[in-house]
Amino acid sequence: MLRYVVRRAVYTIVVIFVASIVIFWGLRVAPGDPANTLFNPLATPEAKQALRVKFGLDKPVAVQYLFFLRDFFTGDFGQSIKSGQSIPQIIKEHGQNSLVLVGASVLFTYVVSIPLGVLAAVKRNTWVDHGLMSLASLGMGIPNFFLALILILVVGSKLGWLPISGTGGIKHLILPVIALSLEGMSVSMRLMRSAMLEQLQLDYVRALRAKGLGERSIIWRRVLRNAIIPVISLSGIQVGALVGYTAIIEFIFRWPGLGQALLNGVLQRDYPVALWLSLILTVSVVLANFLANVGYALADPRIRLGGGAR
Image (tube, rainbow, N blue to C red; front, side):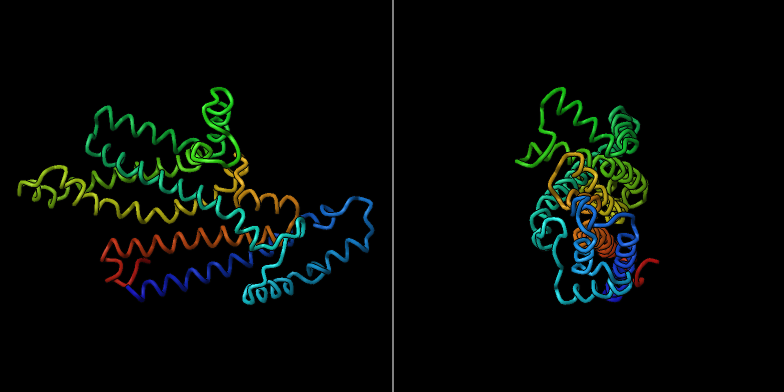
């Protein structure tokens, strides 16, 4: 198990390092100049050049990346070109809101999808099963940004049931959480149903029934433990997708999180903000996959005894 975790950790570090190079290079070669967004059109070329020199933008991209690595290992994360705020301050200010949104979405995804997937399997080929699978198919087919716009238009604007922007309490969370998590919830529900049906057909379930164990005990204490392994395996990808989609949902609902700050940084050519927040979101996705792999190994002894899956 330890060898498997170490190998996955090394792989995770390599992925993060490569991702940092791609993100840094992509931001630097993208069209636009922060001097043009910060200064008015009448600003002198000298003033614009002074800004580039201050933030090291006058040097080759490779040299800028080396300076970035130096700043990373020394803990000097710099400041926003646009507002002058330090990067840690921006992360602290917006990161709490993103954690609340992503955490609530992950909780909603699995608290709802796992029981409903089990219910659909137990009620196979009944109206309950058909209804739940129809809802899951619908949820998988609607893009989250389109769902967000529908929720804003219908639930927020037309009916006025819930707020459509900003923070302020649980009511402000409901629409963003639904828009962010519906696709993942639908996928998990279908996967949970398929895994349960596969397990229910195995011999050990018949043996447990022959021993006189109650159906509820068999389903929730024995079968679920084996059926949930594919869901755990997929969870890293789904949590990573949630983190990736967060920027879009935060922007649509004006949720003041890291995603909205990242988009503003990209649009304003605020390189330090765009770079560090991009890295944070990327690292979050990669770590989610790493933790999912470790959880998969813990749930399935064949993984850790075999030294890890390829």
